Length: 126
Image 1 (spheres, rainbow, N blue to C red):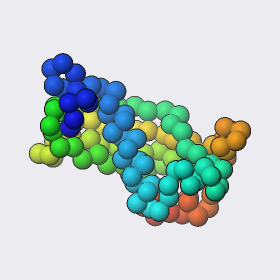
Image 2 (cartoon, rainbow, N blue to C red):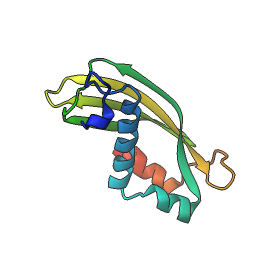
Image 3 (cartoon, rainbow, N blue to C red):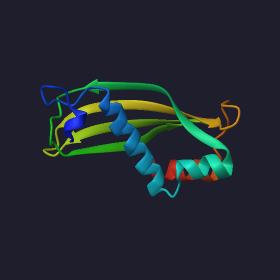
Image 4 (cartoon, rainbow, N blue to C red):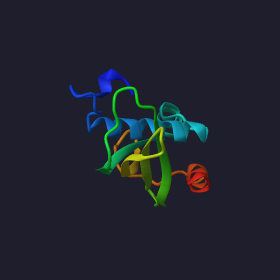
């Protein structure tokens, strides 16, 4: 955990948990072989968060080492819901979250189906 992520008391600022979860989803997608800029450029699609909920269980503090997970909990035609968790180095849970992302056409910003090859990879990795 970096100093910039904390408040004056050295506790992680609540909104930063959403940033950590975003990074975990990006890295998860990257591990499957997909880069978001490439998806926009080559397939004309992008993913945007359409809902997010976080339960804050215990505080993370300055210099804590965190593990953030992302697991597909629901895969629909044009959206993916992730169950996410922020875990402290002692394995205690700092936060649990559910984030739903929608697949959009990059030009029109309208919902579009997730391409079949990506859908298969998402369901296998789920």
